[in-house]
Amino acid sequence: MPNPLKTFRLIRQFYKLFALPSILLTVILTGFVFQYGLSVVEVIVPFKLITLALLVFYVELQRRDEFVYYRNLGLDRKQLWGYSISLDLVVFILCILMAKVL
Image (cartoon, rainbow, N blue to C red; front, side, top):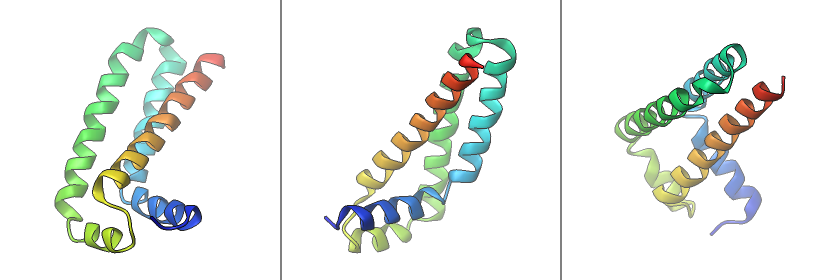
């Protein structure tokens, strides 16, 4: 496995493939929590997970050849998706918590 800084850069580069739609969705869903309160969380969390699954499917279809690049640099597909999805969900949860506080 590459050194931690190199790993972070590779994961950041991979996350950029789907970061824009995912962060945009997070901001929109956080707006719903801000406006309607925590009662909408039971609806928006499954919606976020479903759209995240669709983004994974899209990236898997469109960027299939790029996984070889990351594999050659020491990161396999499961590691890339694990770190990227975890990062995305942490950002989502933090945004919801911030909307609750505000």
